[in-house]
Amino acid sequence: MIDHTALLALPPYGLAAEQKQAFLTSELAALCTHHAQHCAPYAAMLAATGTQPNALTAVAQVPPLPVRLFKEYALSSVPPEALHKTMTSSGTTGQQVSRIFLDVETATLQSKVLAKTMESILGGARLPMIILDTAAVIKNRSMFSARGAGILGFSMFGRDKFYAMDEAMQLDIDGLKTFLAKHEGEPIFLFGFTYMVWQHFVQALLRQGVTLSIPQGTLLHGGGWKKLAAEAVSHDVFRDTLQKVCGVPRILDYYGMVEQTGTIYVECEHGHLHTPVWADVLIRRAKDFSLAAVGETGLIEVVSVLPRSYPGHALLTEDEGRLLGEDDCPCGRKGKYFEVLGRVQRAEVRGCSDTYEQHR
Amino acid sequence: MTNSEKYHNAFVTALEVTPAQAPDLVYGKSNAWDSVGHMTLIAALEDAFDIMMEMDDIIDLSSFEKGKEILRKYDVEI
Image 1 (tube, rainbow over the protein chains, first blue to last red):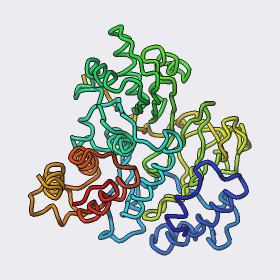
Image 2 (image 1 turned 90 degrees about the vertical axis):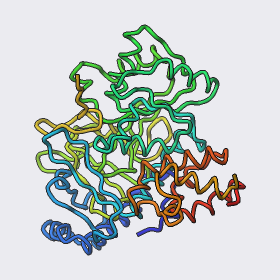
Image 3 (image 1 turned 180 degrees about the vertical axis):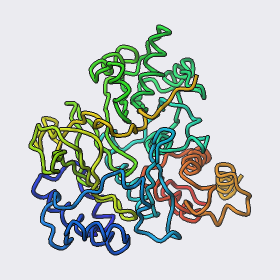
Image 4 (image 1 turned 90 degrees about the horizontal axis):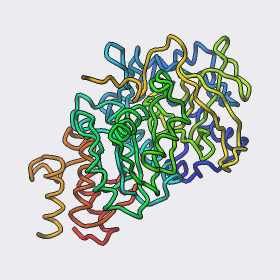
């Protein structure tokens, strides 16, 4: 496997298809071998599919594990004493959660790759940051799950952090105004989960007839659209309303999951989700798992070269999406770009914003 | 307060440990210094020395000793 320094030196969106596929194929082959040696159930699955890591010539030949397997089995490639932390997914009550086992190496790699990706979006400096959520989500360890981990992971890119909601998820408008006055004229980073942003920020401002001015803001949000789709809130409505109530010029959605923490797919200024150099997205037809054509809807497979402590380098999600193109987005970024269409029918509900249940 | 005292205090306050425990701490090896404690610690160090650390340094600050080495980059001698 490639060493960390070389991995981190890669330009996040700089490799064109041929080079990127060669890099990913060789890394994935090494990861298949590594996990087969250290995780017996994984070795059995590779053998069952007849996969020879040394013979891999394309990313698509790596058999993706269904994400659901991480709920049913403890899949780890490190001995228990080397475990650093176990991440759990944001399943709703009553659902089984995924368990992802991290050692220090993989956890560090995740943070560093996330930092490189974010640096290309926000620039190198850490910006004053508004977190559109409650601090209780990280203080209360019983609530601490993917939602808390997401907030913490991204808060590394901020400074002078301000949590905009109280424990009851009430927006602190006075606190926000004070924070904005203090940082007037500066670029500001805002982060939140899509549904929380809509429900507890946009709606609260609308209800109270307050408009804010954040002319140099970048809002990054993620965690799923299902709840908003159920309320018939489209991407355009979300964006337009947000701009009306707080004037944030740059609103970027991202796609990512706890099973591949550190790997995120961020939207560009043209509304396309982009695959960074450390990761890839493949769209597979649900009927036979063959590769779908550009523009054709299918199941999203996510590939990442980061997972070393657990066999999560190629995963079949329960999300549907469409590939939009490769290397030719008008924004200039290389790599594939795609869109997420939602959860497949009858799949369980998950996602940081979609599993949020309001207590009244 | 000397830099060494400020540094030690930041660990004790942010990670809620005793002064005797602080020098042996390693990130991820105790409940006190987990990812939540880490961001609190970074904020405490930045406040104590009036600095703003780079992302890579935040990620690399993984032990009491390593932190001293990193702070040197910001002209803080512990």
